[in-house]
Image 1 (tube, helix red, strand yellow):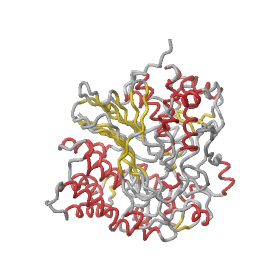
Image 2: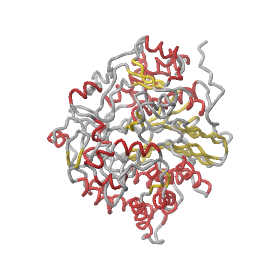
Image 3: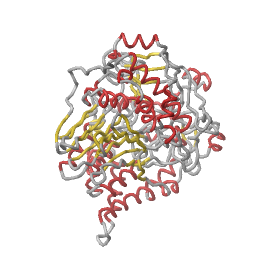
Image 4: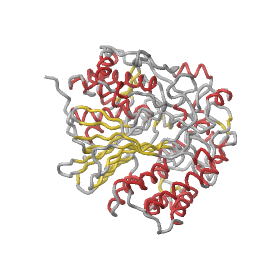
Length: 624
């Protein structure tokens, strides 16, 4: 009878257990701030909003107020209805393919204001507070304002990121140099840094709400709504649009002016949507719709559902091979069929018949082909994918010279050998995006992934203290793409949190930063917990892997046919067996892949749980 590998006895931390409330995130200050909200009577949504604004301040290299977010949640009132919090802004009215091609571009840049979608993260968090929170704007923003005004110890990785783009800042983005190198030097790890301009922005949002009187039906919600209006139509919109209109250096090595306007801000609004779902081994997995990356996880699970347990075990040669091959098929469908054209039929992509046909393509050897499926007799759109070497030879431009797409922080070349848990095999430290999970004693649960607007995205906007995001780099300038750059359409974001339900009750919220790897790493946790019966912390600690044989979502959008990255702890026997099967393996060190976190709830007992990633010594779970 097929078996699943048993977890080891050691875990880096316990899976926390309690009954009051649990938080897990990618930074301990966000986790502790959100837990403080729970302790002071707030619900999970109040706590998530407070933690998210703290992440803007303490992880500025991974997210910012000029960026975006997606979340998926369930309320205690409607536990069986998973809802998506849609905080992904659309392309500005002036963001036409014709304009970008006229600028001499064949890809949307990975850095600079031409890559900016309309910022939507702040509006989304305030919408959540307005509709499902209980606290006032001033109370949830108190934590972020405190860290922004009084300072916080800067992370080593923030310093690494600033150092990586210091020449760009000093030569081409002087406002960013003034913001992040105020004494003409990169800050040192542990230096106490502040963000006074962003603190003032937050105080202006509070002031807009304070102007609302008590003679309205729901004064608290009206105050939050007023803060949302201030964000979309006030000083932030005016100053961001005016600054972006000045030509500045982009990632292609040339200077361009942005096209975003104040009218784009005013016309944008976050929203709620029903989640896309799939039944897997008695659980319901909830994700964003196909305007984002989310259904990749659902498609992969649909392919794997028809296989025995031993084919789903990432710790073995057979399981790792099967998982990698299934992921490649789902990601090929992502690039061929997903997008905000609202024409994607998920009922086909997630059907048993379609999954069975895709499953037959998994052979004993690694595929080096890009193989999207055919829908209604059509093969869909195939992106122009190039290897990194092909792209470099074609462009003659070093992507690191003017900021890239996905943030990559150079580290010392011996970092991997020294055991740096965040170091890649090539000596760089990768990271993009943050993550936050919260569950409260009432049964409210949310998983959210904020991102974009990281400090190296585009020049810092004077008076605001932050920059615009670069999510439009996930659109294509080629005709026929379902995710083509189109004014008013959302880019096909990689932000992809997950909610797991059983018997119409939320039981787990999880997610991870990592761009194209987000759903790949979450898949490993889901398989080990739901199929293998592992504890969440053991699943997070376990050796990770992912495929690089996917069309990159970040500029310059390269891929590696047959490529896979594995942690060395997967074991020499498994790794060499994968290589014999044709996988082009990159060894990434022992503790390098994934930044997973999760929270849990047992509806029968009310017992809550949480677990967080030890890699990078930064993520933290708290609760009681």
